[in-house]
Image 1 (tube, one colour):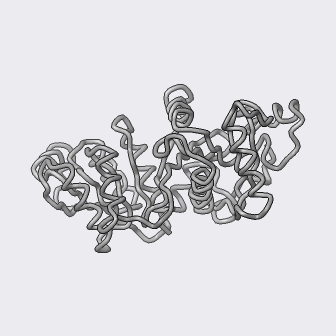
Image 2: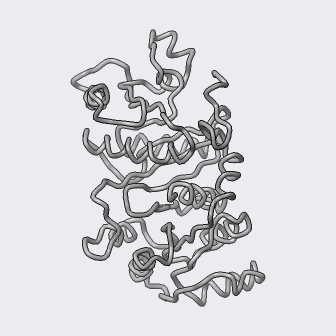
Image 3: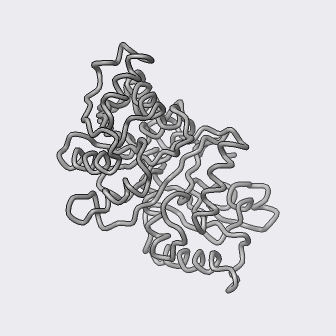
Length: 311
């Protein structure tokens, strides 16, 4: 890999989570509101974020559970966090968390014990939610040995069409910019590099690439369709005759549907053992939709990514 494309913090592109955390720690603290915070991993993530000096937290949920957990596991934090008691009512916790954002009490929204659908319903409420008019999409960042790579969307959009995919690109590009990558290279993934009418992913990728060439997608470089190897491996790109800025060195990988993104994202964790963080973009504030099986570290890194994306 061309080392000149790797970034020094504050210059071109943050290349690992160490640099990433270094930048976040220098920023003004943000406040995370945790919807249905009565779950161990969410509380642990808030404690880690506090220890690392990256964010304050507002707990919304079952106050009795939260206080009991802190007393038994981190008694020094018993009076550190603000708690809004909504009991075990998950829907109320979601709506009150969104309300806290609207009232300026928090800058980032983190899902605790409530279901994703419950939180998103509150976020998308036409009168009391956090709509902007943009589509929501999940942006995952994984720590490859060479650099941080972005993947979208494996969590929100099921089978996005062309316009939805453009929104997914735009949301991912905003995160890339927050990571100091001023001109991210975006690969539209498919199984092959040729357009095949029987393979919708290739057709969509071709349409989107043409829109990019007409300057309808800005602040990034877009190419597709590209198979995964042609997108991330210089050797594969050369063997396939791919000569472009994106081929073999993509910074952002756009998957064709939620199945591809979900399987890809989980394989990074369970097979590659890569550290990851992810954030949902497109609302008024970054939203962290953590999986039930995400570790406290993953949630803490996601909080840091939310802080970075909220600037």
